[in-house]
Length: 89
Ligand code: SF4
Image 1 (cartoon, helix red, strand yellow):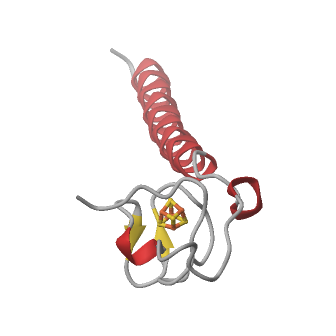
Image 2: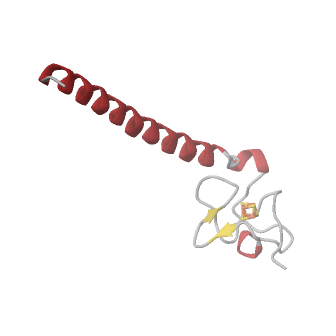
Image 3: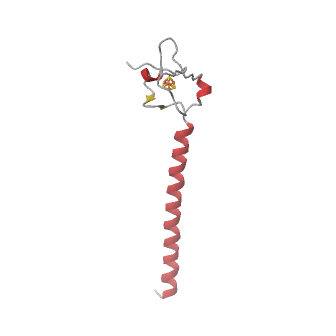
């Protein structure tokens, strides 16, 4: 192998490595964006910042203390409620 073919194959290997790294980053971003978009918008599920007949987010299986929800986006109040409410057993 002469020095030209060595540098050509090294260049090709570097390009392949960069493509793999770039592809991995794009895949990670796509996964993250997909997870975020899987959450419903508060308005689309009639979210309100007060309880509904005694039912509230802090008693829902989807609530993530102190102020988030697994399936509804944004800041979620512990004493809020939405139509996806599912009581803890
Ligand atoms: S009631 Fe709705 S917003 Fe509140 S935790 Fe449950 S699913 Fe999330």
